[in-house]
Amino acid sequence: MSTYVLVDTANTFFRARHVVRGDLDTKVGMALHITLNSIKKAWQDFDADHVVFCLEGRSWRKDFYEPYKRNRQQARDALTVKEAEEDTLFWEIFDEFKDFVTDKTNCTVMQHPQLEADDLIAGWVQAHPNDTHIIISTDGDFAQLIAPNVKQYNGVSNTTITHEGYFTDKGQHVIDKKTKEPKPAPLPAFMLFEKCMRGDTSDNVFSAYPGVRKKGTKNKVGLVEAFADRQTKGFNWNNLMLQRWVDHNGEEHRVLEDYERNKTIIDLTAQPADIKEKIESTIKTAIDADKNISQVGVRLMKFCHLYDLKKISDQAQAYAEPLNARYTV
Image (tube, rainbow, N blue to C red):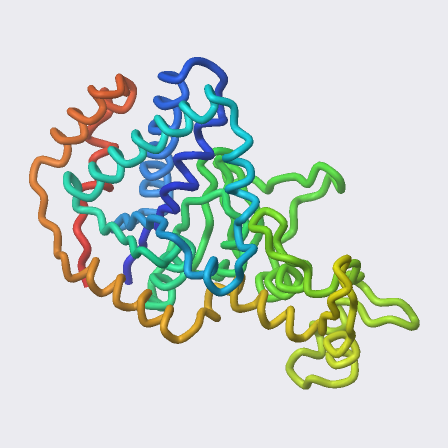
């Protein structure tokens, strides 16, 4: 059995840029530092064996569902000239980092023109069911994958999500700010069901049933009751799923149809068959590359010099170790 560190690369890099205020060089340095430090920490804390970088393509979901992430483009269009210039520079630095991990390390690097990093991370987990996986990301979509052998590490907040709960870097329970109690362990199956019903505003995925209650009332079925009835597909399931509603354009929707649409988009095990084939093929191609790069530590120090990453350069051996480890079956 092996332990893999799966890096949601763009998410980790671009989230890290918002951690500090300052000039552009400071933000770039922090983004690179947090990305590399997250990998080193996950590697050491979970005694990992190999690092896998997962990169974005233009998502197949945009062809499947036209509104998907349309809000992201609207946000980019609203940037000021200065913000747009900063964004462009960050993408240029990100591309240089991507080239570094691809050409100068022994890490597996996966990318496909039609796939998101989420697809590749979930695909890797499914392709290695008997191994342990540490997903580095701040993305809440990965909660659906949490299991005894799958954890999620947030390098920005320095917290880890496991099937037993949310933990700080010192192994203590994360305290919920509202309840003042330890944050309970995620319920992946219900969280996925609820998200497929409510949609995802961050990705511009519309709700299958706007205003649906989590818990039902005497006269109306809620998500909890329908979820409990999902296997038998009895009264509660059908009572919810066969409901119809009308949107602001006067178009009628059937809950079940919109739920199935959202499930295809959101459930990382429910992609169309042709997409699953692309995921499997991309993973196989990446593994078959059988990288064997020498002097990874020296190459890392040269990369650090370009961006004045002195703290990392001073501990180059520790940071290079996860980047040097080859994939083994």
